[in-house]
Length: 207
Picture: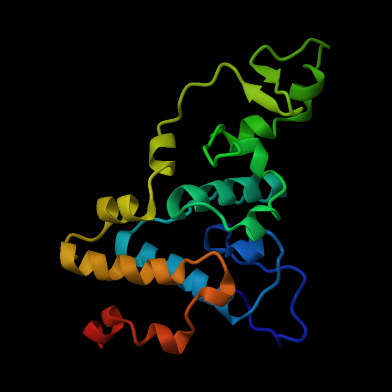
């Protein structure tokens, strides 16, 4: 969740954990009440599954671009393609997806290696495990598929069905997933308000 502030005077930065940030936070597109709705959806998923939907490691020493790229990749693989107006604001999109939306890179670290990987090692020789890509980035040529890669590429529905609490049956799962899909919408203006959320059948059933 984001801290309270007046809409006429929003903060330039927020302290929301990376895994709870809405797309507009990650890409600095502005904030409003619907930003909190997104964070609520992420917390609801985590409460019902015991896992984070977007488990991003936002360490203090992580370059902001690495965190941003990792987050956007998680969003696309879990929720589907970005709307054009949001996709255009993520300047690194073409590094990870081709013109038809197919993911072509899975390792964010390989695209943002230490400076020594670009310029060569400390002894002046090049790093043999990295090659320059056509766009000037770095491609890890000695990389094996990470065990988490397959999990990262799961959709929201696949992740939820795998990690949901045992007491949630298939019928309730469909209702919850419908709720999550209504919440986790890329465009903030298309998300429901808090009062509209309370009218959803899942909340009506537990009230």
